[in-house]
Amino acid sequence: MPEKEKSSQTMRIDLIPDVPSKPMTEKKKRVVIAPPTRKHTWVKTKILEKGKNSRYQELLQSVYDAAFITDLNGRIIDVNVRAIEFFLYNRNELCNLTIFDVISGASDTLIQTLWENLGNERFTLIQAYCVRKDGTFFPSEISVNKLRLGQMCLCFFLRDITIRRQQEEMLRTEHTAIQNSGNGIAVTNLDAKLEYVNPAVTNMWGFDALEELIGKDVRDLLSDKEAADKMVRTVMSNHETWTAEMKGRRNDTSEFDLQVSATCNRNSDGESVGIVLSFVDISDRKRAEEAIKEAERQRVMLESLGAACHHLGQPATVLLANISIIRKKLDTSDATVNELVQASIEAAETLRDVLHKLSAVNKYRTTEYLKRPEGSDSSESRILEI
Image: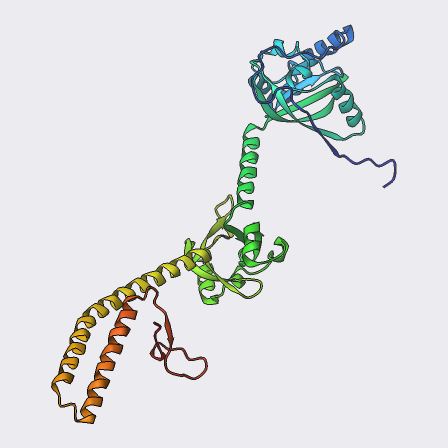
């Protein structure tokens, strides 16, 4: 760019306040500057006289921000109504102060910096805390310009940004909470493409960086494509909230259990701009539920087994005793009869031993009983292991 051409730029200055968090208990120490000269008094008088019935005064009073007109030493020459409302002084009190009395942390070097910067035809923006008459503070954004009113002056426009600062702090807090949340949070556009994910989503799906997920279709993160399509339709077309348990598909293609909540994301005009999703990994909960179900199944089976052993034990004992008595009463010369009786006694004793073992089982386990083709493991081919 040729040297003769100048560009308008904005210089930003952040001032550290003296006491930004609580009211002042003592009067703020004023910056010592030279007393008003005859020239200063003349300029102030001329500006005020000129401004009584001029467009300058009309414009000054109509400005939304608090406006201060100062000389090059920072002495306040003129103010508008908003300045009086903001700072709780009357006009005469303000016109007897300097800009250093109302901007916390300001010093005489500020004027020199402003003048040098504005001499290059740039704009200057200051972030600072301002001090009211009662010693309370409020955050402000201050723009400074040169103003020629017979003599060169500085014009300060101060805007109270308390509400904006509170909103920024709230947004910062919410962003920190989302970034550190254990639940996955994702935001998509109207095409269900991911525009934002928090670190929890990256960890759940096993990606190395957030950027790998940006631009992906959120439906690709879920195993059931039909259910994922239904979710998007429900939220985007019907504007309803979707909540369901679904399967997620990780980057390595493994699956895990999810609780998914999705709702429509709207802009400040109430228009739909996408979907906000919340993901909760419920794999541990599912495993715990399965463990509880298995424990309950074990309890029921063992109770049933105990009841069966109790009901079969007494008949087995009677059967064994009766067969023993029958053997004594029979003619022992018949070898075939003796073998049958002996086999019956052994079978009754075996039944007694099995019932005793069954009554002592404390965990329901099965073992293979019938050989089946490889890959087949039906309940019909397994029996209780004792």
